Amino acid sequence: MPNIATDRKVISWALYDWANSAFATTVMAGFFPIFFKQYWNVGVEVTTSTFRLGLANSIASLIVLAMAPLLGAIGDQGGVRKKFLLFFAAMGVVMTGSLFFVARGAWHIAVLIYILGIIGFSGGNVFYDSLLISVAPSGKEDMVSALGFGLGYLGGGLLFACNVLMTLKPAWFGLTDAGTAVRISFLSVAIWWAIFSLPVMIWVKEPPTHRKKSGWKMVGSGLLQVKTTFAEIRKLRVVFFFLIAYWLYIDGVDTIIRMAVDYGMSLGFPADSLIVALLIVQFVGFPAAILFGKLGEKLGTKTSILLGIGVYVGITVWGRFMDSPDEFYVLAVAIGLVQGGVQSLSRAFYSRIIPANRAAEFFGFYNMLGKFAAVVGPVLMGLVGVLTGNPRHSILAIVVLFLGGGIMLYFVDENEGIRIARELEQKNGMG
Image (cartoon, rainbow, N blue to C red; front, side, top):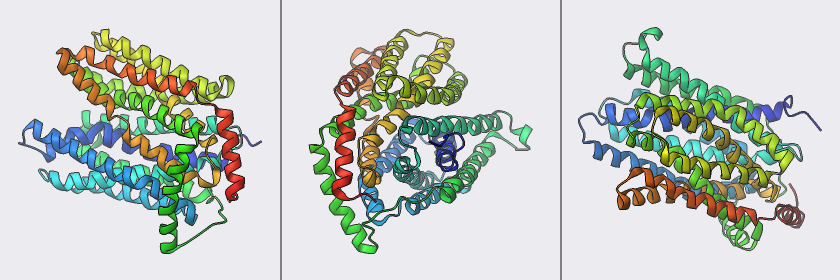
C-alpha cells in the first residue's frame, strides 16, 4: 500500500483544499462582510447592508442546493468530474479576482460577483469530494480526507494571516491604505486558488465509467438518476440515517463557525481579538485534522466523530459562561482541535458507505445537506436570545443539534453500509 505522504495523486488532490480554503477564510469569513458594509454600502443603514448580505448568501446557497445533486449525477453519467471541477474552480477564481475592480458604492455588482464566486466554490467541492474515493488507498480514507482538511486550514490560514497583516500595516507592503490592501487580498486569493488547483487537474485521473454519455443524453440521464438516487437513499437505511445525523451535527458546527464572531461581539469583545481567534482556529485546525485522521484509524471513524461531537457540547456549554477575550482564545483552540476532524472524518465515513461508481451523485446530496447547515442553529440562537433577552442563553440552543446528531450517528451501522455499497457497485457495474 502506498504511503499517502509521498503519493503524488493524494497530495495533488489534498492541495485543492489548500487552494480553495483561501476563499472560505479571506473572502467569506473575513473581508467580504466587512468591506461590503464599509466600502460597497458606504452611507447605507447598517440593517440594510446586513439584509443585502444575508440575501446574497441565501440566494447563493439556494442555487447550490438546487444544482448539487444534479451536477453530481451528470458528472457520474458523463465521466466529467474533473472537467466540472475545472469549470467551477475557474468560475470561483475569476469572480474572486473581479472583486478587486468593483467600485466604491457598487454593492449590487459586488453581490452578483460574490454569489457567482460562492457557486464556483461550492460547485467545485461536489466533484472534489467525489474524487476522494478514487484517490484514497483502501482503508486510508480517514487520513486522506484529514490531509485535505488539514492543508485547507493551514493554507487558508497562512494567506489570511498575510492578508490581515496587509490591512493592519499597508505601508509595509507599499500600499496606501487598508481599503487598497483588502482589494489586493481578493486578487491574492484568486491567484492562490488558481495556482494550487493545478496539481489536481494534472495528476489526478478522471475515474473511469462504463456508462459514459455526452450532451443532452448526459443531462437527461443525470435528471433521471437524481430521482432514482433520492428514492434509493430513502431506502438505504444506513446512508439515510447518516445523512440526517450529519445534517444535525454539522448544522451545529457551521452555526459556531458563522456565529462565533457575532456572539463574541455581543459579549463586548474587541474586533481585533475576534480576528485573532479566527486565525487560532485555522492554525490549530491543521495538525488537529491530521491527528483526527490517525484517531479514526485507531478508534474507528464513527467513534472519533462522536468524540468530536462530545467536545463540541462542552465548548457550547463553556461558551455560555465565558466573560473575557482570553477565554475566547482558549475556546478557539478547542474548536480548532475538533472542527476539521469532525468535517474530514464525516466525509471519509460517507465515502465508504456509498457506491464508488456513483460517488459524485451521492456527494451531490451530501453537499446539498451541507448547504442546509447553519439554517436551524442561527434561528434557534436568535429565538432563544429574543425570548430570554440574554445572548448568553442563545448559544446553549446549539447543544440540541449536537445531541440529536450524535444520538442518530450512534445507531448508524458502518459495516452494513459498506456491505450494501459494494453490492450496489456490483449490481450497477463498476466503472
